[in-house]
Length: 186
Image (cartoon, rainbow, N blue to C red; front, side):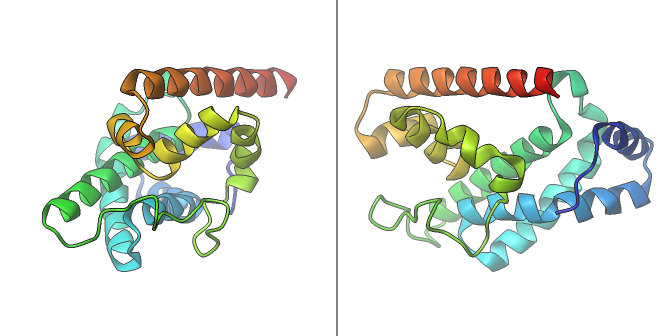
């Protein structure tokens, strides 16, 4: 995956917000495979994921003017759009009865799934999430990598919703500390 440096990211964002279609092509080239990996982990259908990826990039193009670097990185912003759009699509598909709802019996572990890797090793996310306690790591995997809601995690694991929320908040705070330490180190 081609990476964009911080200075180049700022310039790319400026160009995107000015409506530069070439900048949009660059954005797609850099981030499409990572976002596709996220979509595939949630949707589990390559054909639907490919179509949905196009919809996601259209949303990104249409809403790039709303992006605010003070609230997070461009990738995180796009990741949230991809994740939320994928979850909405999955819920629609489930409601229409077109796919079997994932259960713990047919849920493939993140570490075992190789076909559509998110490239978390490049970003270092896999190692960072691996530093969390087992309970926190499990919650993060369900919510952020598999697209479950907190209520769905509560139901799936048979633990109170409040416990899921607490573990999620604690895990995010731990990851935030690690990222801040990495940023000050750079």
